[in-house]
Image 1 (cartoon, rainbow, N blue to C red):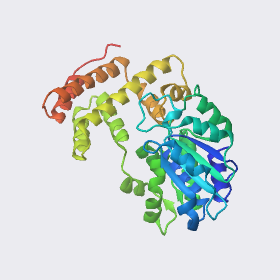
Image 2: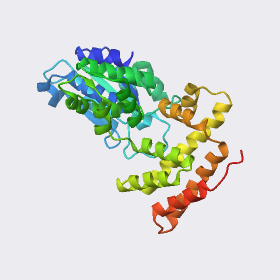
Image 3: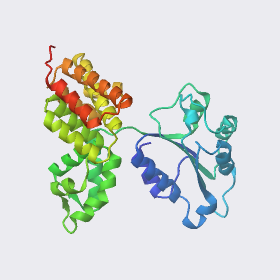
Image 4: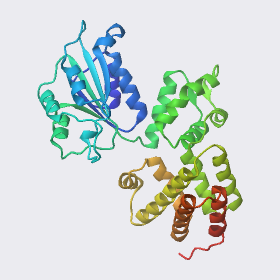
Length: 344
């Protein structure tokens, strides 16, 4: 079953399975589904027949006790269980003990009058575990994988159309760039953009430029381009803007390192014949980031990418071990990098 099919079912007040597993890290759809499952229970019955538990702090047994209870003056009970980390390969000791034997017994005979929903915001589960195998066999599983850029564009435009709006191509391109093609971030901007555009119905480029801030990752991507172009003045100016926006120097540096690492990995694997889709799957990053990396790495030599990556590690060490001003450290890094010459 697809996410669209499930949302249509829930909007019609229907739930075709007693147990659901919502797997994936797309926050927008996680929130939409939580709301849709809650709507299955009439508002006047929710106090008694709807419950949501965070399994990071609440024992599984509490949620299962609720799931096994009959609805109170209603037809259906809905129980949502968030963050079932015991389904993953995570080895860190949980803050609470979970009775997995009770879950196994429940999955053997789920309550017909209860809709039990596991929200697992993880890229994957540990398929070797018995409880995972049993859950996947019993539950209707919805996987919220990363949308490709094309899918993000289509979905966002469809949501605008539903409200009677369109978006000009240049504006959509700018929105994609400023949000890293993150559907959750894009949908968070939808209402604001529609209100700004009203009474007109086409969202213009100026609306995106005036209302939508670039993500830190996108700002850092622009910074990467200035670094690689050895534009010392431009790079230091953008770095200063990020500091003035109260971004943490160590966080900026960490994202910079991550971007250069991605560029190096992309360049090496692309030379081995990896496609954009294979790169996204292998490197476990959003397809849009791979697209940008592919557009960037071809313009620069591997030696420059390596030199910048190692230089940023030196900056990180100095930030952690000295009291020197982060902007000064970054300026020194740029001066040294801009004065170097790639040999490969």
